[in-house]
Image (tube, rainbow, N blue to C red):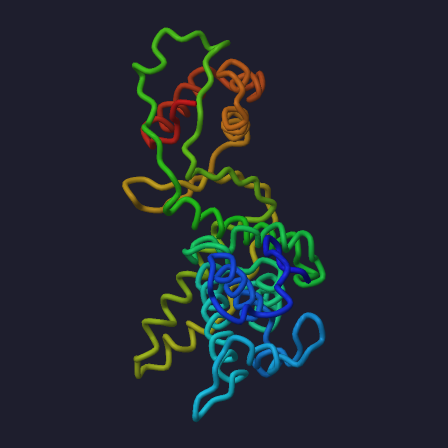
Length: 306
């Protein structure tokens, strides 16, 4: 698969770094060398994109030393890159790993990172495209693709909620006297609205509790906790749930909401007026319910100015 967002690799390394363009060419060459998938034995690919031996390409921009060839030195960098990013995805997606099992999970991660290599200075963004990739490549997670997609969405929402931008919260004074038919509110950028087909929230919590128990038991002598920590967490049951991922006082939370409340939040996020958003909840929703919902949302800081 062709990596997303990367310019094609140069045919050759610049002989000397005389200009900024030469440096960019070298950087692009090095990037393509690193993000090429490793072999089944975790080695550097033996061939370059154009079919040339990788050892020949490496010799153009990596010097050998008295212990390692150019190819071997480049291979160390490639292995460090792949081990680190694979570990990063594994850390961010413990529930997805538990769902798929190690063999299928790491096959998915390798394919994903080959298509979506890291483009950021921070590893925080590694899994941003993973939910869509699961949907686009269903064979990698079959027969649990839809469930894996929900789990990946939930776990990415946790990452996004942890450190995404926060805007000044809306206050009653900000909306006092504003006509609902014209008033448009916004949701905090760190908020994620998740309409899920499985009870993924409980599943993710169960996996984390199991892993925490495993960690605590790692130095224990008693075999009881060790045996308990190895138990497989049952797959989540199928049910329609509506979850808002958010943070509060710098801590990560998720909150289930009613389907009607979820519709209101969706409409606000889409830029609809307050009147339109409330109407989307349906005629069975009582005014006091709406007031209670908005009071909670404002207390949690979910609402901000558009």
